[in-house]
Length: 345
Image (cartoon, rainbow, N blue to C red; front, side, top):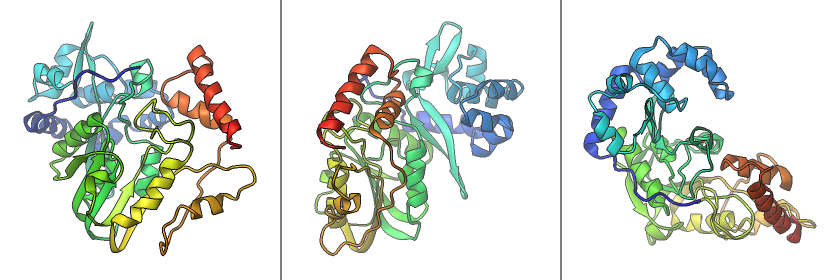
């Protein structure tokens, strides 16, 4: 497992021409749903064949759906037509496309994402299923269940300023632009910042991006609202993947955000975040998370679900493309479960 040598370079010009191609072909949330029909639900279940069949006669839009949503290799002439006015050479240079034996395949995940007011495009890395291998350490996730949980939990009252801590692909900041006058987004990962910048350029949005850990990039600043989808996976103090691992032991990452977030809010400000916490033998979980709160802070902790250690470890291994039955999977599972056992989790 290693990081990539170069960051994607999706310039203003590349994003403008790609945006023109997407608008011309109808590659947006409504266009994709219309083209796929009932196959859209099948694709959500991880069944791609109906989507392949549904897009056979969809022209340039079908080519883009198969490239970005299905991980297909498409013929050169079809890709060239679908990407116009962006040339294939420029798309390859920006890592949007990768030459393949029979044409081109996607180098990045670029897909429509919408709300009740319209549609955006989100740029992220290809997942393990499409890559056909484990993801690199600096992998940038697409819009998943965790992202959408935070989107739904976030207050949408109008505010002057909003901070998105650990922006990843930028999806929380996208939604924030609907109700915040100024949006600032941070991340520790240079790759995440590069892909988030591409997301914002592609959607013609002005979002301030700053690099650094946790709240350090915005020291001495205050915001009306803060959202945070941190690397909340609990376990040993290590970093296998920057999108999920903080390097802090157990639930210390979640505790850090809960403790520090209120200090960066203006009077009357609010924050919404995702977190994970340990259920430790002999301790009430409510007491555990309450101890994280600074004095005079009002908070709701909503426990969405509980997972036993074996299920938890297996879920996150598969998420990274690691087979829990493989030698690597068994070794990682063993070390992780040993840590849980040693800490009475």
